[in-house]
Image (cartoon, rainbow, N blue to C red; front, side, top):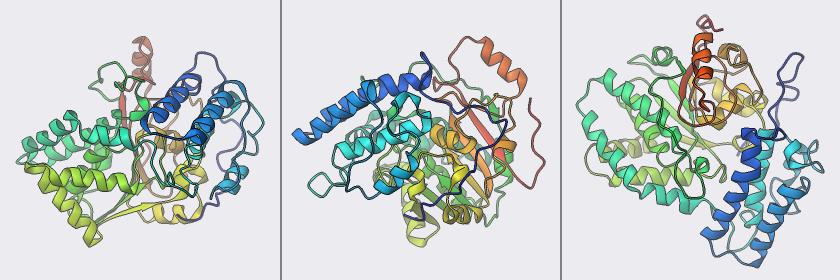
Length: 409
């Protein structure tokens, strides 16, 4: 899965805003740790006929989060030594004292350990989130969205490109980890306007006839990954990219995050569909066979750190991309740093370390955000809505190192 050694000391320095933690009563981060994670443990428990060992381990994890301190991984895990190093500042302290990004990542690693994902035996490699992912793929909403591709079949290339980019962006709302115990999406209607929109800058990096290499760091499977694959097809079919590299997680993560097996499931769903969706699925399948679409992974995609600390081998891979597109909320938090940034902090400044031009496509589902102009920020703050965390607002932000950064603030 690649080198896991990370650049040391990156992301630290005087004047940086504080890292977001789960410690503040009433905060979004605390709600995730205190409410969403315990609810997810019960959903996973109910989704499989686990035995007594798994039930005991899940109960112990519940108690530990609510009443105990962070415990180290037990013996035997393939990444135990890594997590002992990554968690040395947090083991033995309350979960709610840990950085939000670290605590969430470690929770998912511990959940996999509790159900025996890494252990030799019958549950090894069994994705605890697979039932939720498969149910979404079989749902009527996916069927409807695939049929809607017929309406774009004869659209002008620019119109089609704009529609597919929006579908990929708003598909990020379909986050199984962002749903309550009922399985329903978070309440609230999507805001048709974006809080930041650098779409034109993204397309300028990918002119027609380009031999560009586009890296896409995926987020969720299902209703997000299918639009991502359709957008990838458009880039390749209409000459805006010569090659696409799709990066996915090496293990189950954050409920609906995509792995290679999820790419295959989504591609099969596309190929089985009638009409334009099936045609697109066939082209994507062929593109993988020809090496024009390459699926890769790396251990760092499940690491509890910002991308500023990515290891050298991953940095070298991304440096070869014309642009790297990062999908979703978690990738955004890792891209800019999960800190209490003033919202008008320039996006170009906090992503200047990234080894290629970079684009973020994200619906807002956590507190961190940068790159807003002051007028937009004042309008959002005056709305009285939980616009940072409700999933009702979205953004497209781009940093092109060959262009002057956009003015913000």
